[in-house]
Image (tube, rainbow, N blue to C red):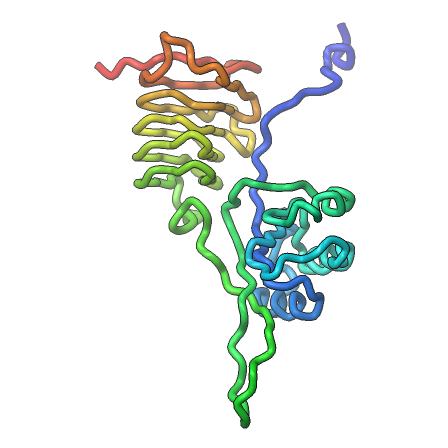
Length: 263
């Protein structure tokens, strides 16, 4: 059989996408342009073509259907090397036009965010209402108190990972000293070690490392993945594995799951 004949026409694997969230206080082009300029300090390559989620949760009142110049909004972010791919916390009546722009409806917390909030205004000679405007300040990273420095080879999390949280150990291993709850997601470019029950999703080798592994003292995960090869457990773990110390590694194109002896 030739190499071309052996090649599969399609494979589906888990792919980890890390995005930044833009928490919008306005959809007006001029205000957002000013806010982005303040975030970047005029540096043209401040962002590196990162995927971006447009979050409407802070907007009051919420925008009405047909009120947003979507091509202009998307183009503005792209001009700053941010690529909108999804929208979060938008009214239901906007969903049709959001999807018409090729954007997804997102409900997962990202690992980085940027908040658009009112900037300080210069003193005024007369007391008068200040015009509403927006600027940007870095918001706390979701899931981790601080991003791991590039020189650090292991990210350590001491607190429980709650449902809806996502922790990503970029370029490193991840060690979690507390429970990973259902609905939570832990991701690492290297291996994942959970010294407590693992009940959410665990994705190791996110950057393609096939030698990455997943360890847990009590394996109860909803989904596990190594280098994109994944397995779900919608009906629960096999009795011989559930709740036991477990190691998961990649063996060719399948996941090898086995219990660990701690004696």
